[in-house]
Amino acid sequence: MKAWGLDVDDIYALVNFRNEHWIAIWISISKRHIVVWDSILTHIKAADLDVLMEPFVNMVPYLLVECAGSDEERVKHTLEPYTYVRVTVGVPQCRAEFCNKNAKAIREKMALAIFQETPGGLAKENEDNDENMGTYDEQGSG
Image 1 (cartoon, rainbow, N blue to C red):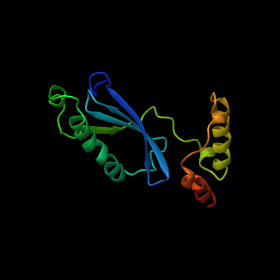
Image 2: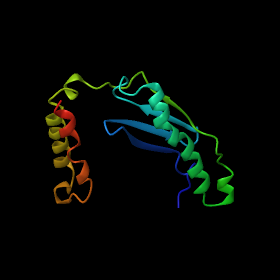
Image 3: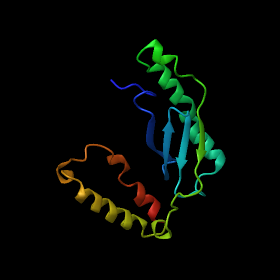
Image 4: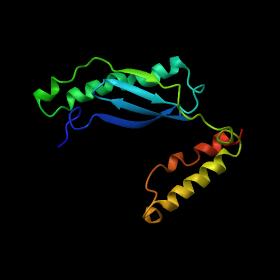
């Protein structure tokens, strides 16, 4: 079994903001630091990002301590909160055509292309997430 912080140094995740915007995060266990990538920097205010990141900066250290396989591994981690930074330079920003009324059609085309390129993608059944299928219909009608 792999040990967090020894065999696994990094965690990458997508985080949803208010069911309207996604950001990517990189959690560096060894550096006790989180990097946030946001393709629309103006979408989340700094204070809102602090609130969004609060569970991550506090819960990741707690989970590492609690999920340690042994006392030796447990003492390698502390409950001190992680730090985080939002990268503002070098992150591709959302192009205008992805944010207009044609955005839903563009996203559907891109999703279909990715789905068709996925080996065995056509054989997979949609077993969950049905409640979210209309999310972009509601947002695109404005």
